[in-house]
Length: 234
Image 1 (cartoon, rainbow, N blue to C red):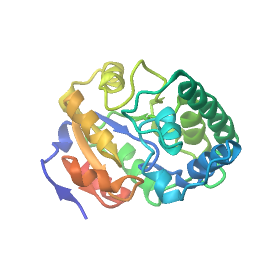
Image 2 (cartoon, rainbow, N blue to C red):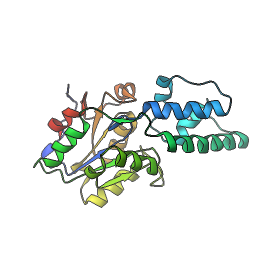
Image 3 (spheres, rainbow, N blue to C red):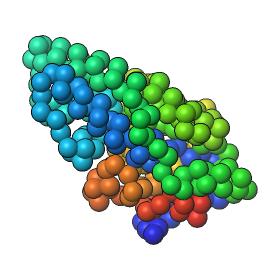
Image 4 (cartoon, rainbow, N blue to C red):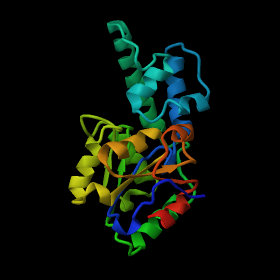
């Protein structure tokens, strides 16, 4: 079902910016397995996959920090910072080897992207902007047959700041040569919706992803329950 909070002028859109995890691909299992491997390595109790899923979206350092039990606004001592940094390295190395064990493209994504690419509705380009590090982001896009749809794939370490800071979006706008009102960000969490606000672009929330509960707090201009509905929205 499509919910319209603020109509998006689809005939004016020239750039679609997609989140990766929870929007294009379901990476929950591989991320959870990698976090639990990290926790086990440091003799910490494992966490349920659903708990880990609530920590996803703000980038790998924050995912590791939250999984280790450090709250976001906690001032860390030097030894704690060092421990988290070591754990992050372990997590990233493990995830690098296991990022495609279970990760898959959501049903309907490829068909929707094909329809959008083939349509004559004025959409000129599509890009990926994730808070996941750029190398695994691009590796997943390439391995799962999504590469040809996107002019650019950027990750959480591609720029000085991550979403919801608008820096990444602003770079994509410059690359595509489009104005903010000609672009939309599509994502599964409030981080993406807030990014859209901060960059003054349109936003579309997807309710099937990893963080649907956050969209109740910060919904997008349009909300969809399936990737197939992108075709009608864009």
